[in-house]
Image 1: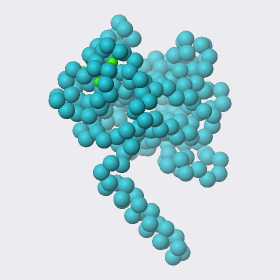
Image 2: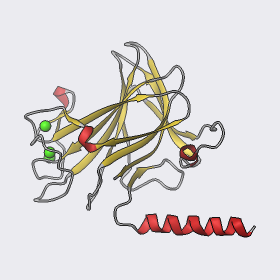
Image 3: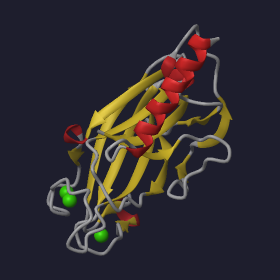
Image 4: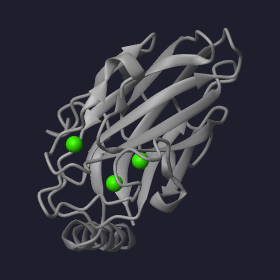
Length: 216
Ligand SMILES: [Ca+2]
Ligand SMILES: [Ca+2]
Ligand SMILES: [Ca+2]
């Protein structure tokens, strides 16, 4: 009993340390009921169907699965030419001091594929990402950065991508420089999109995501 209290106290101290340390993480969403972040109002595009769902049971002890709480976001849908659809959210990060994007992904046997992580930074100093509906919604004045990650099988896989691994997919548009920090009137990093791509040209995806955050 004493042992357990000491352990619990240790955990509380550790958690408090994390909460107050200056450079810990920026939670975009963990999809827990009642914990929706102000910044995390997701929009949806394409054929993707999204819903908050109970977290699947883990096989045995699994620290990452435990960190996913009670509920996750389920994403599923059929693809047309590999493309299924995606979700996006605006980001509002006054003090940006992060070096990585992190997400936990729970795949399924038949619904694998890839997740395209897309970040947009403001390069024309107007706190807005202007996009061209006639050109696949590509930014007109700002950078779009992309990294693709495979969706593994069942269980939560924690993915941590350094921003240095993202590539600018619109060279010549924006300044082609990763500048997520707010300064000189630029809004810095303003938007995140997650786009699902199936394994087959006419296939489907089915997976869950959790703990979407920026960290270092
Ligand atoms: Ca802009
Ligand atoms: Ca660019
Ligand atoms: Ca830029």
